[in-house]
Image: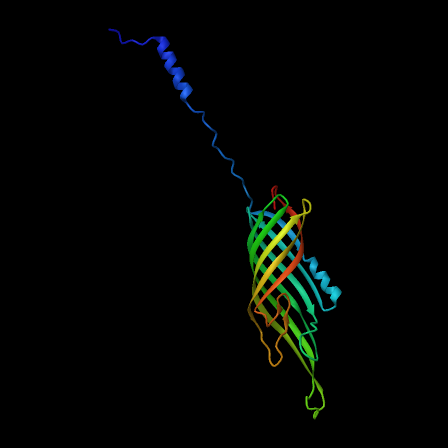
Length: 228
């Protein structure tokens, strides 16, 4: 009895073993590196120009945005406002002027090759002053009408903003978009007997939440490839 294996049998078995082996797939993935500061942008609120045409308000607002890592963003905004609301007080000439500043953190994500969406939370502060002249008249007509004036300086206010943004890429540097803001009052310096009517950067004081829409242009000053 012979237990030997023929060379032909060994060769056949080795061919079968090789045929049953699955090809080894290359599973190595290239990890994308995102720098700490992805890009730097300059923002202008061009919608404020319309206020100059109305004659009721004059506002200027600019901002700076830093792209951080893949999708994070840090944004700072500042502005100056002069407001002469026609519906502030009855028989009154009222004006409020001042500066405001916002600082926020959020996410900025590309939805398509041409469009971005962003969501951020921002904290805002305003330093302002107001003044007015109110014409006081007697309803009975027994007293002569007279004017009562007031002027308040060094007033402050603070609030929070939840901001949803959408923008479209015009070219490699320019973006066109809008912000929808929901402003939530934190505190302001209340006054008597005539309270502050409006706060620069926020809006009317008797509204504890104020929705607003801003139109903006964003210019990318510099960044890396693949930036939003």
